Amino acid sequence: MTAEKGSTLAHYEGRNRKLVAARTAVLVVDAQNAELEPEILNKHPEFERALRQRALPAMKKLIEGAREKGCEIVYTVIEALTLDGRDRSLDHKLSNILVPRGSPLAKVIEDVAPHADEIVLPKTSSGVFNSTNLDYVLRNLGVENVVVTGFVTDQCVDMAIRDGADRGYYMVCAADACAAYSEERHSTALRAFGGYCRIQTADEVLADIT
Image: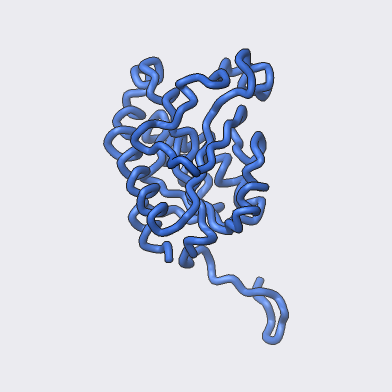
């Protein structure tokens, strides 16, 4: 349906727009040491290849480039608020996902680690908007555009994209800076949530930041 001539309804031109650095945040999802555990990498060799050959280099380029342009870099990691994880979501309890408070597994991977004054939000669910105050923080920062990168594409990245879109943020997925436990799961996820965001490479995202 299109608005009639003279209508006061806003007209939107689609998802292709420049990203004003002062109103843009790069959200780095679960790029933490827990994803480098041998148990995970040995079980999912496609993930290890994607992580090391594609996703981490692209993520590093995206973070450094966006940081230089003046964007906010915001991290979220899976980390309980307690040592025994009693505060975790039911899903994390049922899935036996536990990164205790203060664990080295909660630390961001060194190659893409935050600078001293960048925000790191611990979460205990797949959806960062559900189990942290990210929405509140982004609005306080004046952020309108959220570029998502991280792991894994078909779980926590997916949730961030969909939930951010529903909360009124202009969502972008840096696809080459994300990875899932298989390439099929990665590509299927991109197709599934592509209607909620703009999908670009890290280089394309950086070219659109003004």
